[in-house]
Amino acid sequence: MASSSTKHFIRQRTTAMIQVPLSIWLIISVLSHAGDTRTEMLTFVSTWYNAALLVLFFLSVPLHMSIGIGEVIDDYLHGKGLKSLSHMLNSVYALAIGTVGIVSVIAITLIA
Amino acid sequence: MSDTIPQRAGPNAPLSPHLQVWRFTATMAASITQRIAGFGNAIGLLLFTAWVASAAMSDAAFAVVSGFLASPFGLFLLFGFTVAFSFHLLNGVRYLFWDAGRGFDKAFASKTAWAAYIGSVALTVLIFFVGFSVYGGA
Image (tube, rainbow over all chains, first blue to last red; front, top):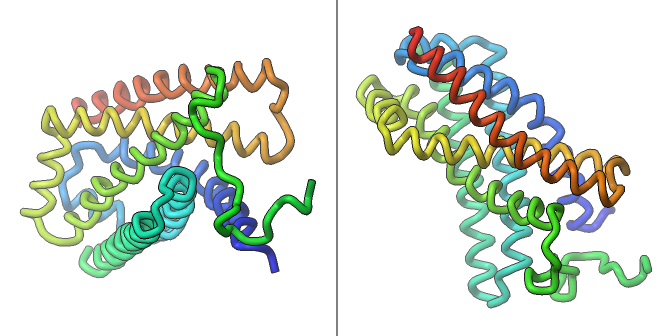
């Protein structure tokens, strides 16, 4: 079994590779929907492939974000208590973003 | 060499070098900027998530969030997040090439670091130009 560092290394690069095309799709989508009404946005998000890509986004990005910020915490915070508190807040933030994002996308597919 | 690499990230795990032991180079600046931009993206993600969540909630919630994003301060934040997002994306592609064993040549790595800076400004300008054209045309 690979060490946790190796697991983080591989996951960080896997999510990065997913997020390169995903980011380009997101930029184009957000740009073509700038100034949308809520109804227009609900129609966009509830289209099945857009919903799927957004769920992928809200799974991949929080993982990438928590690994990245976790590395910065390891590198620059040295107090034991401060370090574990920061790691905990980092995980909570990623989980909160992922949960709210995915639940919102699913809720939109149900109401639109 | 390999026996100096710990099996687990413990108290003796290798850390990134500290800022004061580095001579200024474009590659080192890009590395620090990547971390700062990543942090910025983490905050910007909150706005994006709020936008999607507000659309799921109600007309009133959506009006609040999209009204904020279209305000001068909202646009200022969006501009900053777009710079951070663009840089992290372009510089991240450099790192993916490095992981594939390409682009390590010193002079070339320096050039691509500068390209990430210039490219992120260009991409931001392009995004805002297209954004305002779409927004204005709608």
